[in-house]
Image 1 (cartoon, one colour):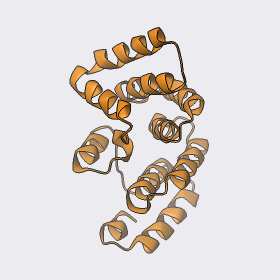
Image 2 (tube, rainbow, N blue to C red; image 1 turned 90 degrees about the vertical axis):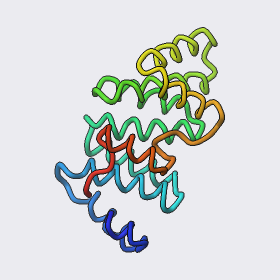
Image 3 (cartoon, rainbow, N blue to C red; image 1 turned 180 degrees about the horizontal axis):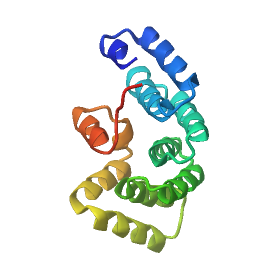
Length: 168
């Protein structure tokens, strides 16, 4: 599917991704992750991507990576309560703490939580990796898309260093 997508054969790639996420087994998490990213970057279909992530979580309940991706989609959909619930679960599942805390701070702010709680959450995020967290925080504050969805080479390298794109 990834090769087809790289060649621009998007309909064929999507058919392969759909088949991959229907196939039970340990690769389902990677298939869900890659399909969601494909839908966001190549099709611009965030709603279907969120649905794919949610189905992937149902099939892989221990996947913190899928939960963080889903939470980020909920943040962008302005559904902070859903994002916070997914992030709390992702935290329990051992997801990338740096990303969880940045997303948590932003979702908390989006939810209308008291400023003191938001400031504490941002401080936690900044303490994990000051330079990168500050950049992500500024990205969210500006209303731009988070790293999960940006589709740039820099994001792809961030994603691959944190378990990112895998073969479907």
